[in-house]
Length: 130
Image 1 (cartoon, rainbow, N blue to C red):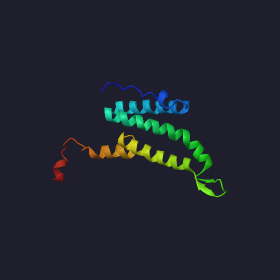
Image 2: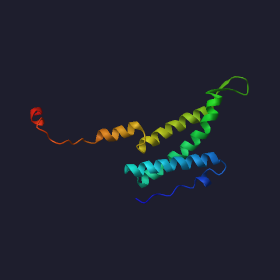
Image 3: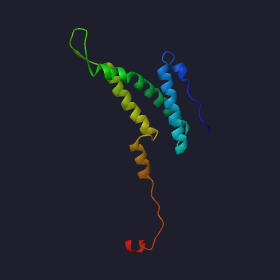
Image 4: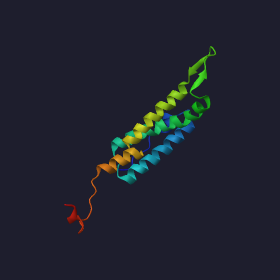
């Protein structure tokens, strides 16, 4: 497969330079990993795009959510759930699924390795195992 072109993150994240830069960084790192690992195909390029967008959203939103905490003071003075916190949790779950699909996570990589049958050379000691 020829090296894919980066999606137009400047158009996608017009108002936010930080998101654009983070998405481009993650996309290039992910595509490089997939290419080096021999895993690059059209389907994974699409997933890498969605992964890069989710990472950009998460890395921009997380500092705000962490500062505010999971519970905020509501308009009537009571405690209310922080939707920024919830969005970060959902983005984190989504990124983990993308990492598994792209074989980026340690779990996914281990599953791939354990599925491969290890072939070893026969030795004289193998006769004793039968």
